[in-house]
Image (cartoon, rainbow, N blue to C red; front, top):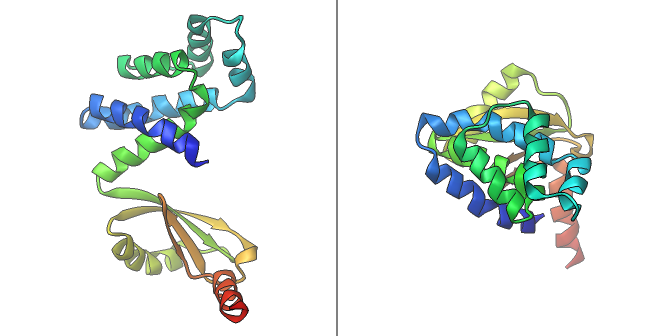
Length: 177
């Protein structure tokens, strides 16, 4: 869904530039609340309904989110709704979160493994992964039995795949040529 990411990037960067320092960190929960509401199919249908005015859409989203929004977040919501980009709001929230974490030198990392990884094993691998990606990582582990063995790590748009499945695919390609 590269198109959605492309649409969301300018909004996330504009909000990031408007927010400063610790204020940017405080906006993350507000954006996540908006993203959760905007991501619901019923909300998208409401926003796409030509009989519903943009002000009504904003009013409904604000009421459903049950969160007091900072003026910058409220302005972002108005802009997104006015431009018909409500579907991009979850991606905007994700990119904004990534920008804030990048400034602090941290990133979220998803580790896919064929088997559950306990905290001790993850602590053994963490320094090498942090060195490889050049930043402090916040890990989450997802069990994916299709990997057969090894791990696959995703940090933003970077992927490190040392799984058995990836190696088998490489061998398959090498044998096919």
